[in-house]
Amino acid sequence: VQLVESGGGLVQAGGSLRVSCAASGSIFSINTMGWYRQAPGKQRELVAVITVIGSTKYADSVKGRFTISRDNAKNTVYLQMNSLKPEDTAVYYCNGPIIRLGVPGDYWGQGTQVTVSS
Image 1 (tube, rainbow, N blue to C red):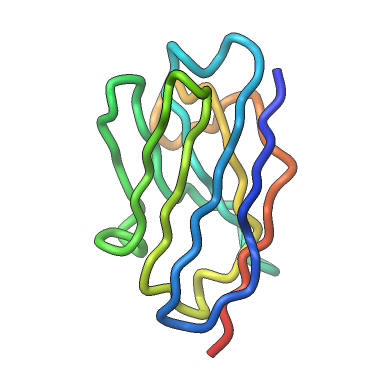
Image 2: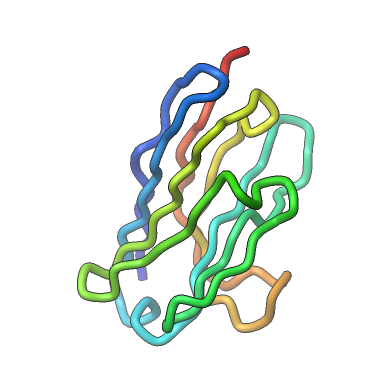
């Protein structure tokens, strides 16, 4: 099983980015997937999750600004990030399969850096 993220980068505050996670193997099509992030000096935190039928949950800090989506035919999950703030700066990790909310799945991507300048 491999999770490969892409799409991070540097953006000014108020801007937008979309990160993607392509999954290989059998975990994607039948399981909840999610995005975590880890800022320097902080613990990794859950950002958003999406079930196989498209139900979503978000951290309070990103509600209304971030949107998680998935394309089951492409085994890909996306995180659209709008109205970005400097505090969103972190390495963003794809994770799955998520069996219970708040408990990370067994597989992680390599991470993609998102940097928001003020």
